[in-house]
Image (cartoon, rainbow, N blue to C red; front, side, top):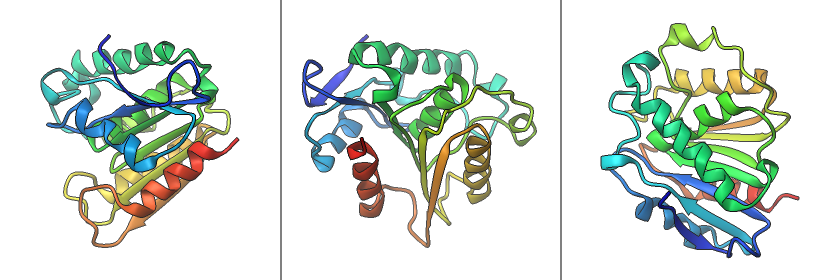
Length: 201
C-alpha cells in the first residue's frame, strides 16, 4: 500500500494518525496537517483514494449505491493500520469531508478503542433509514470529535448530530462543536481540539 508519511518515524512514534482526504483532494493535501499540528512523537500516514474519491455518490445515499467502492475504501483504511506498528488504542483516525465520513464509518464498523476518531465536516454513511438498523461493536470510550459548520453546503447539521448520538450510544466519548456561518473547511479551533486529543495519555 502506498502511504504518505510525515511526523515522527514509525520506530519512535507513540501515536499514529491515519489521515483521510476529501473528495477531489489527495494524500499530499491532507498530510500537510502534520506540519500544522506539529506534535512530537506522532506519526501521520495518509492513503490516497483512487481518482481522488473514496466512493462515487453522496454519503447520504443508501450504502449499496456506493458499493463496491465504499467497502474497498473501508478495507484500505483498515489495511493502513498495521503499517503503523502500533496497537489500535494508539491509532487515531482523522478525516475531512468525504474522508471524515470514511473515518467515522470505519470506527463505527470496527469498534474497539482508538486513540481518537476525528470527523471534520462529516457524518456516518448511509440513508437515514439505515442508521438505526445497525448493531455495531463498542467503541470502548474512544474519544470522538465531530466539528462542522451549521451551514456546510455538503454536510447537513442533522446528520452530524445524529452521527454523534449513534457513536455515543456505541460507547464513544463524543464531543461535537458546531461553528456558525463557517462554511466547509478546517478551522483553528478544530486543530486545537485535535492537538489536545493526540497529546492525551
